[in-house]
Structure formats: structure tokens, C-alpha cells
Length: 398
Length: 61
Ligand SMILES: Cc1cc2nc3c(=O)[nH]c(=O)nc-3n(C[C@H](O)[C@H](O)[C@H](O)COP(=O)(O)OP(=O)(O)OC[C@H]3O[C@@H](n4cnc5c(N)ncnc54)[C@H](O)[C@@H]3O)c2cc1C
Ligand code: SF4
Ligand code: SF4
Image 1 (cartoon, rainbow over the protein chains, first blue to last red):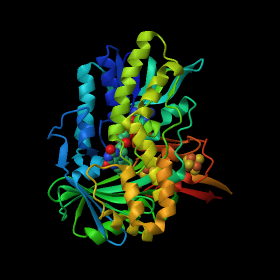
Image 2 (image 1 turned 30 degrees about the horizontal axis):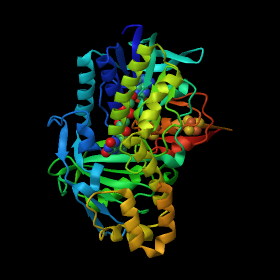
Image 3 (image 1 turned 120 degrees about the vertical axis):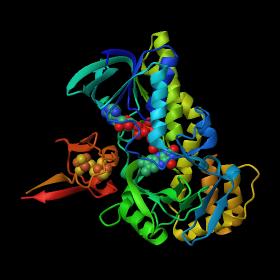
Image 4 (image 1 turned 30 degrees about the vertical axis):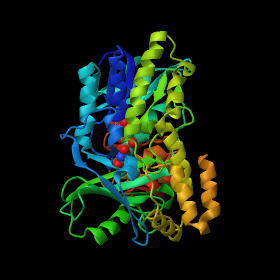
């Protein structure tokens, strides 16, 4: 490990890997430090990603694709089913990945492009001088050393401690942290081409249960619930066990996965002097689905490019790096996060009766091309009883 | 009597969910080992969030 790089990337997930790759491809020196001993494991993900989104950055490879998905099904609290064809389900269909391999592949690509990579190398503090982030103190092989950089990219995932050490409050509000548990199950009866989502305050309060296939008779079966609904005797794992007993009593559990996903708004500002925050560290996962693989890849890639541009111009102050913040907010991804945040805020107010009404009425809606506004407009037509609240939602979406 | 945060490391799945909600930044995951610093104010937020129930604020004599 050198003591100085153009760009230091904290965290070797999809966000960090894309950032380092973009930086070296733009001619910079870059280093990824990852505190775990192995990239990609343990997994903290249901591994679903939209086809169009993924292929924006990488060609699908059977080595890290566990299943190709061509439809989604939403199950209402009363058991009513809403089937979504691919063009309706949009980003909810595509692939279920094998992230142990996928994350490695992304880091490999960064390394092949010329980035340095160190595992079991943990940032323990930020180097901040005169209000400018200048790198990190890194614990590696039993000793601590300074690694300095012109731009440091915080890609340290949901924990997001690095930005905290730079003085930025990244704490997620209790109600907006989805606490999750998932089993990788085998020997279960599923449709291998269909992702299934179960909604309802009994199954998953302010969250959902997902079944994401990973082959003929295997799937990620998991749940996320709001932190404020979690407590002794009713934690994510308790709900998951109840669900599994009911739906897959014969299945075998070959992996336990736990984790947290933020469903809050992104951080109000995702840059500081000498610092860019990407992916989960910037609270960029989708407020409805919790999906964050693509968002991390997109912002990581953008951060690497903006870092290169600003370093080239000799200005890495917050105002210069702010191009990054503006660009992602104005992107399709940024707009989707904002819109989905508002929809989520409305959805968590619904009791099971209203959820049933909405889901069951959505069955009757035919759309050529999926659009959230068209959907809401149609829902208003079909649910006169919920006119006022749905109109308020429509208005908030603009 | 004083309160303190107990970490049941045999239950913990080292996922970092608790780290992300701690208002004091008192928790830190060192790979698979969760540690708590003296910045902890025993608010119990982390204990509520943990998907496995590995955290507990207890009263000690
Ligand atoms: C249960 C669950 C299900 C999910 N399902 C989906 C899904 O189906 N689809 C989807 O798109 N998204 C899903 N997500 C979200 C997705 O996993 C994340 O959004 C994505 O991994 C974010 O990528 P990242 O690069 O920002 O962070 P991460 O992938 O979390 O990578 C961060 C890395 O930084 C390392 N790190 C942390 N601190 C330090 C430090 N101090 N020094 C060095 N390294 C450090 C960590 O060890 C980690 O490897 C899910 C999340 C959970 C918890
Ligand atoms: S939330 Fe629970 S399982 Fe996850 S790291 Fe914290 S104590 Fe461990
Ligand atoms: S009890 Fe409160 S202050 Fe202490 S570690 Fe947990 S969340 Fe942080």
C-alpha cells in the first residue's frame, strides 16, 4: 500500500469498485481498501437487479447470474395476486445475481484497469486538514498508517462511518432503516422465473417479504420491516420464521443473511471538501424496493469521473465536487428516488384493507408503458373511496 | 445501578444495521466483531433494530 494516491476508495462493494475503475480509466492512481477478508462475502442482499440498469455497466455473465426473471407478482394481504409482465414491472424484473461472484468481478475489473486493492484493510479515521479531507488512517496487517489522497470516496455501505469521521451526520432515522433477514433456501416449490412480493401489516409491517429465485428449487426468501416495528419477539427474523413455516415448511436453509437498508431521503449533500459519498453510504437505496446495487454502481462510476475531472482542474473543494451531487440528483435514478420516497411515505400509512383495495384494483389497469403517474391516475378512477388521499399523492408527485 | 449495552456476539450476524442507526456513532464493526465505544448513551435504538436480537441494554448492580 502506497502512502499516497490520487483517489482513495473506502469499501469494496459495487460502489467502490466502480469508483476506482472509473478513476484509473481516467488516468488517476486509485486504491480500494476493504475491511473484510474477502470481497462479496458475507452477502447482505436479495440480489435482484433490473436488466436495463445492469447492462448499462456490464454484460451479463452466467458465472454470476443465478436466475433470469421475466415477471413479478405482488400478493395483497388478503391473498389477491397482481401479476406484472416485464414491461409493467420495469426494474423489478431482470436478474437475480450471485453477489459473491458479482462483487468480486467488479473489483477484479477495477484491479485489471490498474487500481490497487487491499482486503482486511480498514479505515479507522479520516485525515482532515483545514476542513479538507486528505485520506484515511488505515489499519492493515496489525499496524496503522496514513494513506493520503486528493479525493477520498466513501463507499463504505450502510454503516457509513467514514463520512461521520469527517463530521457529516449519516445516522439513519430508526423508522427509515429496514431491518432485514433472509434465508437462502433450497428444495422449495417456486416459479423459477418469477419474483414474488408479499405485502401486509401482519406479514411485514412497513416492509415486504420477497421470494427471489436462484434456480429451479432455490430462492432468497427474505423480509424487511421498519426499524420502528422491530423489537423483542417481533424482529425481522421472527417474521421470516413465521412466513417460512407457513409457506416453505419443507425447505432447507443453507444460508442466513441479515442486514439493514435505508429508505430515507439521500443525504442532503453528498460531497465535502476532498470527499465524495456513493451508494449506501450516501443513503441512495430506493425507498420503496430497498434496491441499491445499481444506484451504488451509477454513483460510484460518476464519482470516479468527477474526481478525475476536478483533480485535473486542480480544485477538489466542495463547490467543485458538487457537480457530482447535482448530476445524480437530476438523473433518472435521482428522480426515481425522490418520487419513490413520496410514494413510500404514502404507502406506509395504508392499513391492510386499503392495501387490498389498491392491489386488487390495479389488476384491472392496462398500461402500454409503465408510468407512475398514469398508474396513480388510474387508481384514483378505480378507488373513489380513496380519492382524497390518492389525489394528494398525485399532487406531491407533480 | 448503571445501564449498559450488552453485545451477544454469539447471536450477532455482523451486518452493520445497528451501526447505521446509532446517533452517537458508538458502534463499529471490525469485520465480524462488533465493538461499542464509551460514546454510547444506552439509548437502545440499536437494540430495537437488530434483526437477530443480539443487543440488549441492561441494568447492572
Ligand atoms: C437484506 C438486503 C436485501 C437487499 N436486496 C437488494 C436487492 O435485491 N437489489 C438491490 O439492488 N439491492 C439490494 N439491497 C441493497 C444492496 O445490497 C446495497 O444497496 C448495495 O450493496 C450497496 O453497495 P455499496 O457499494 O454502496 O455498499 P456495500 O455493498 O455495502 O459495500 C460496502 C463495503 O465497504 C466495506 N467497509 C465498510 N466500512 C469500511 C471501512 N471502515 N474500511 C474499509 N472498508 C469498509 C464493507 O465491508 C463493504 O464491503 C439489499 C440490502 C439488504 C441488506
Ligand atoms: S444489527 Fe445485530 S446482527 Fe447486525 S451487527 Fe448489529 S448486533 Fe450484529
Ligand atoms: S445504545 Fe444508543 S448510543 Fe449506545 S450503541 Fe446503541 S444506538 Fe448507539
